[in-house]
Image (cartoon, rainbow, N blue to C red; front, side, top):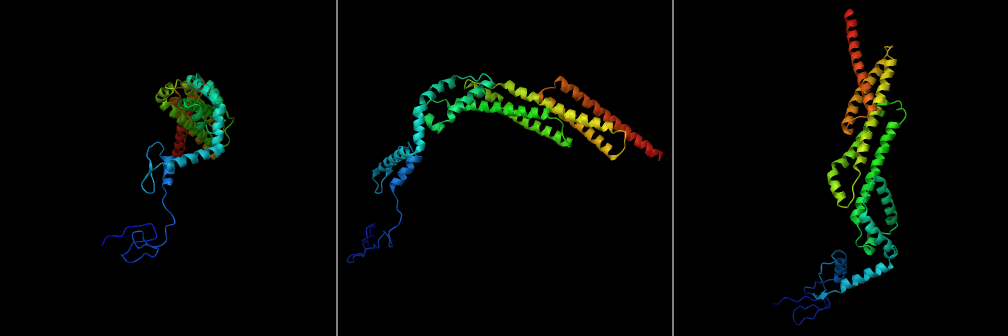
Length: 329
């Protein structure tokens, strides 16, 4: 017996001589009609958003080629744009500010970023102009298709880098010019080391990429003032001097209390000795990093070293005297 043909109509075909009763028994299945169904227009709308430019035509519910869905979606998008305040603002700014932005584009292309101050001023003015746009990308896409986006990104990167170096310089200056160091000198020296580690880490990041960055910047007709990086690096010498000043002050304080033999005097000498040793180690670390010391740093570092040698000698003598006393007992 031949198989029944499926039908979406309410009359199914059973055996001959028997009439259907409104609900087919064939391949269409029994029960109520489905509450959801496929619609080619839905797929067309999806393709319009996510697969633009593929050139594929959608297939209608019965297999025929249909472009109605895509056309419907295009009309819908046009209608949405007409009603959207965002798109209206974008198109309005593109028309109103377009001539000025078009004139700005070749200026950006020719700009050579001669020095730090000039870059900061140039980018500040540029951000004032672009910051007023409802959507920078959309407005420029409409009115300046040839906008030098790559050059703008590089100029922003240079500006950010210069500002970061200014921040590091201020951090170093605040640490080296601060008056006093509070009651906890160990915490003060620890802060100095933390500042050095933070600054050197960021400076090293720029230094490691120097050759690659020079090539990349030059491809846009600009360069970074690498002397600025070196200047900030040399300012870390101030941290070594500050550490040495703290160590010397604590050592002299312990010397003033050398007449007594109480526990406080012993504690002060131990602390002074540890700080002197720490200043020698930290100072040499900074010396290697910065590429040397200035005259002031060289002098104070020498003082720290001399005091440390004195501490070691006095410590040896103290141990010898203690041993003599023990033998006499």
